[in-house]
Length: 259
Image (cartoon, rainbow, N blue to C red; front, side, top):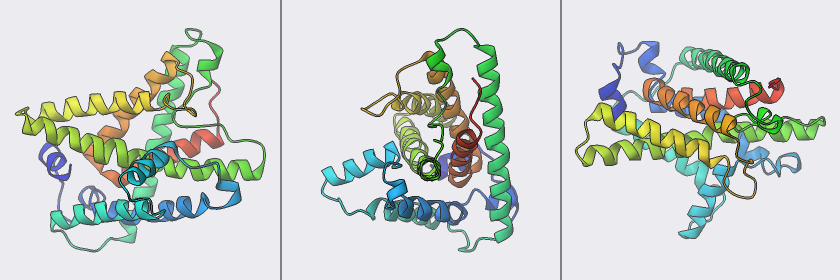
């Protein structure tokens, strides 16, 4: 995906924040603390039920092909980003100032996505069932106990990392690559890839025994959120997309929407 996104999006001046924050190495360093907290947290009693659904899917696939080692998935995540960075032939260093600005940017973008949810809720007020109004992207509202809240926070971190890994870094990149090989122009490959993977992202929340009951309002918001994260991935890189996703889930989990 790095080659496609760099062709579509101006990379910005070398050494500037726009360029530095999009680098795969910056993404890896930025998400590394979240990845460690999640992987350690799900092993704790309070985090035993907090494993993200996409994490479970990816581990099941790895186990099916004979790679069931527990820490293989996070190791593969790290290796993918390291390999991606290697192909860019850029310096192997990251500024702490860039990481701090990435955190601020993710927070601002998470607030913007929360505002989109509120606007949609207001616009569609009364058009769907009361049960549908409680649905929000990848969020189960935190319970009253400390352990339940901790478990939800751990789950939100996993959603930010592994959902972006699957739907943006793997599926969006792969879709664009396939469409390019079929002769589709780069710009249209990106458009089709964004639309298709956003639909898949929305639909995935209703699959399996732990999936939500389908509601058109929640599906619409999740599709919009998928578009939002795809645009972030293409324009701002994996780290910003993953950090914003985790930040949004935490924001809604701590401050549930009134919809």
